[in-house]
Image (cartoon, rainbow over all chains, first blue to last red; front, side, top):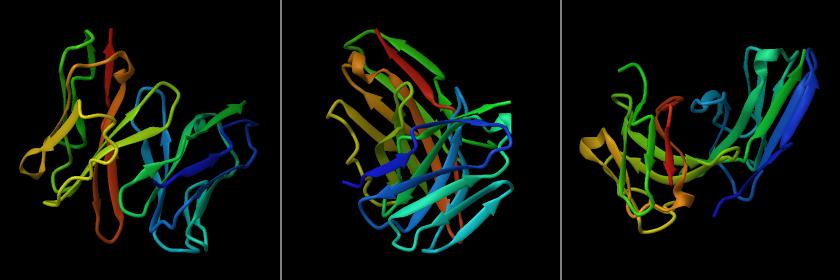
Length: 108
Length: 114
């Protein structure tokens, strides 16, 4: 089955720093999605990517769909304390599968 | 409703009992997913309904798990003869993908099997 490798597992950064995380898959995906999950809640969709090479921004967040269609990255610029949470990548060749998540902690 | 709702929000049951978890998706969303999430872990795919197609059940961990979606709307996930390892948060997501993806997760049902 499809496997998604998400890295890093966790990050502890200073407020104001930029953050980068990425996902790679064992197969080609048609869609890449990035989510954020706060404690006790379901994941919330941040950015959706639909074609290879696509670069999309949502405020301070930027994500790219890799050219090979087997990877994607998410950047958060100028992090703030409310960015803390778990970030998941997800990809869809057919059904939607998730990476294991990146835990982001921000020092103020 | 405005979003995806799930019920109950919490369920504590004894090992060996059956449980039913309900998901009310967003009206007009054609696809519905069930995932489960153990503490501190990622989302484990369980089952996927898309329109009138046969559901993708490839993620169901055993034959104790089953799900149905009635009338293309409400879905019920049933776990028979619950085991302690079934304890997790069960998340439902409804999905529509036309020119762009529109997807929302419900708040989840926290299942604890004693």
